[in-house]
Length: 223
Image 1 (cartoon, rainbow, N blue to C red):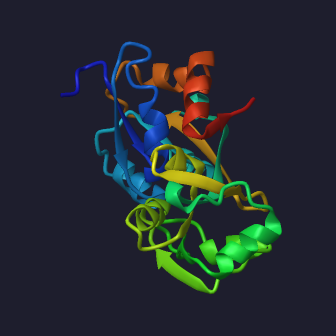
Image 2: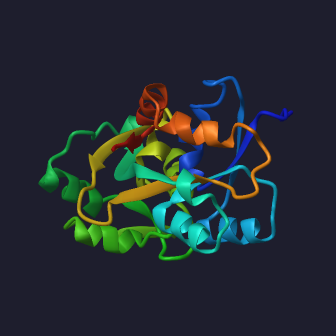
């Protein structure tokens, strides 16, 4: 059960594993509530109880424009990489471009549809990285793509590095680099935060310990 000093965080589902690595690090627990960015902003407008918003940079900017977060608290420089991942049993990590394309040609590949829930057009991202797949299965979020792989419904999934590192059954086959394969994120304190540790959590993200924990979970923190 949450205590008075604990921090509630609105975050995207793919950021949940990363933010949880900070729970307890500074003496308070973190409770993530996950939803797509537009839904989180709508909840803040309704004054749903929340302390910190941790999401895509455009979501934080929208919240700032609406006066929903403390402008001086905003931190950026947080990035999450898109990767192609498969199950460990597939044993095909470390392929070059030609080998990866050959694997895609014979695999069932789960990618996000271009919807607000995902904020990613998986097909377009594959194309931007000069990759094609004959058997594409559309899903709502990268977490769904990861589940498709671990359940055996797909051979490969286009997911975030945070998704892959959070599940020991997944192996990263390739890191994608062509824009928009690197997603920029940010965090800010809710203008009506309840927890006295809301700013402390944002500061923790930028601390050496926070940077190390987030990095191990797949979120890179840069200056």
